[in-house]
Image 1 (tube, rainbow, N blue to C red):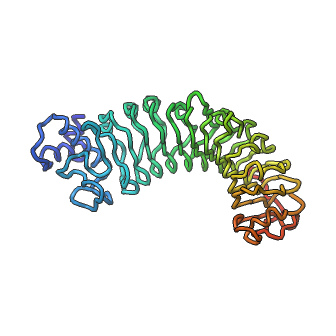
Image 2: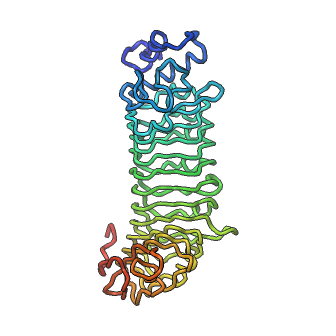
Image 3: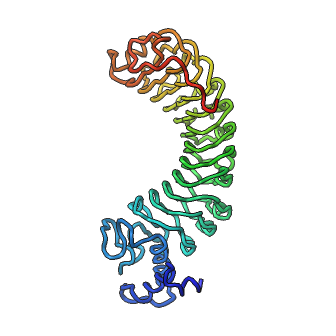
Length: 399
């Protein structure tokens, strides 16, 4: 605005003064030319994001190993962390800008760059909300804002424009309140990390029509409640789901691990530290690509099927501790087993840990593989356990 350009304390005035009087690019640029405007806007970004106090690549020749310092005489497309397509900025703040002491809010001038495909500012001090004009970034594929101070709301007009967004990193910010439903409508999304925030309420349904390419969803360390929407397990690309340390209740959806005709790609399911109940769904026992299955610290009950270790032969971590499981511990490991951690303590198991399992431990005679085996030794005979749990289970959270 005119007021911003006249106020010597604003990023806009500082940028206009720099491009008009201090920019040493040679030959000098014509006022109003595309390159002149682009350098002005990048200077606005620099001052709005506290550029003089960046750790690397600020004006004046600070350490800058891969690219030129910002506000240097070099082409702005070569400034550190930047790249251009046909002379227009398309990538910004990528690579080494993580943890670069970047502080401030996004100025609306950034939305001039409609070719923008990558913005990565993880581990900085970016504040405020995402500007509505981010919806102009129809080519945006990566937005990385992990460990900043971003807050809600997310403008619908911004998210509706992200038709090509594949990677959205929002973990460790100041997001409070209901989960933004608009984030379940990103057709190209492959990975969403929104863990370690303060989101509350129920989780909207992710489904294969709206997010058909979703592979990774991290929701841990929030305050989400209610049941786990079953629709997410109909997405045929889902590889990792982490919902640990929330307040989800009810049973696990029956379609977890369902056969899509060519097995199921799910490798990681971490649902620990919730208020979930019931038994492990039958489909889970057939999820042959499962690597980590963590159901610790819930209220699950029932017996564990005897073929769990032979069917899920790719398992590396099986954590069922702090529940109400009962009956014997399955006896047979697959010859192809890759199990490294087996946590069964604080349940109601009984019987004996078999030689098949013991022979895979540090105390066994086979190759060292199962490095951590923990159970309630007072209830289950175990000559090879690396740790003994406490027989008495703690009260569930919230009880």
